Length: 79
Image (cartoon, rainbow, N blue to C red):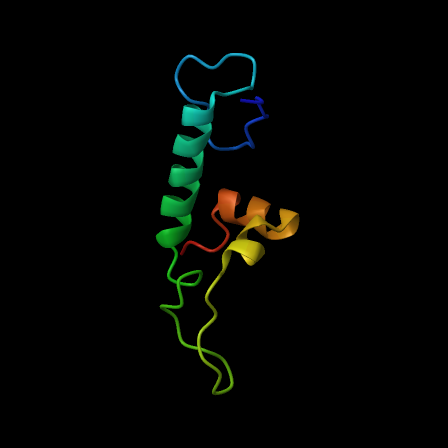
């Protein structure tokens, strides 16, 4: 049960004051992250593809790349 920092800007779970969470709180945070990502038409392939290609669909590897992860948290792919 190693604690780990909570990425911002998502809110910290209730009662967390030092920036570290329990395993249960961490799992709840990731559920929230994936729920947020699933609400994006772009990330889930519900937009038209470009130049005759199929639409983009984000996979786990793409979502957790640092440069993409931050953009997802910021709502860049939600319109």
